[in-house]
Length: 279
Image (cartoon, rainbow, N blue to C red; front, side):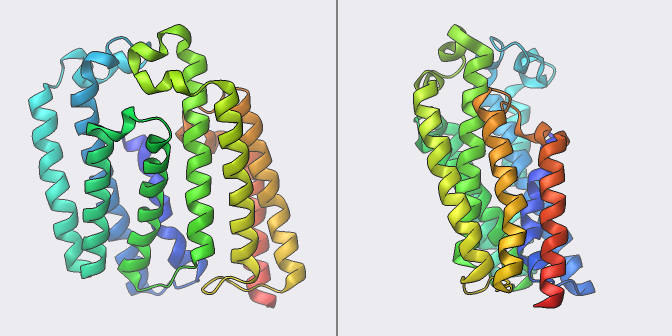
């Protein structure tokens, strides 16, 4: 169920936190929504491992996964996945109809990804990006917090960038055996991933600038503060591009430990809070 991947559910918290909508009721609803997003994501991992068990046995690290080793049967994994896929949207309806709908859309998208879309080059990356955007919308729906289109563009572009870096890293790690593990990986050669990384990074930067300055639903910081806040964020994008291009982004969940990314993210958050206070 990959608890170490639950950090991605942090995106559920983003919209209300950026809007500084932190009442006790909102915090409670947000925690519940993030928990349901974790359940839905875990259902995806269970289904994915059940489907990928034969290929995972050929992977240097994934072969240690419980389904691949036979510790958990494929039938057991699928059964628990089905329960979680049904439970997460159903419980989301308790928070709000839109929250349940968003969780249902996330479940359908991730099932399609596990069954088919992850084998389609580029589409797999775009599907991952869609999952990240839906996570943001889950938090927005749970707390009735509006979210800027510019911000969603930035999230989608950032997700494409991270997913592309992951594919590039996996290809570097597996080498000639990449196609045996997943056929679509053979498509992500350096020239292809370099272009995807550059394009997604450019859209991410534009989305961040638009969100911070002109986007409806954004913070609309003073021009000077917006520029100051964006500077470390862009430095963080540059840091990630360096990591991805060097093949060190195969496991995005580990990048939270990177000092450069942590520093740029922390500085951006502090400047954002100061900018909101003075704007």
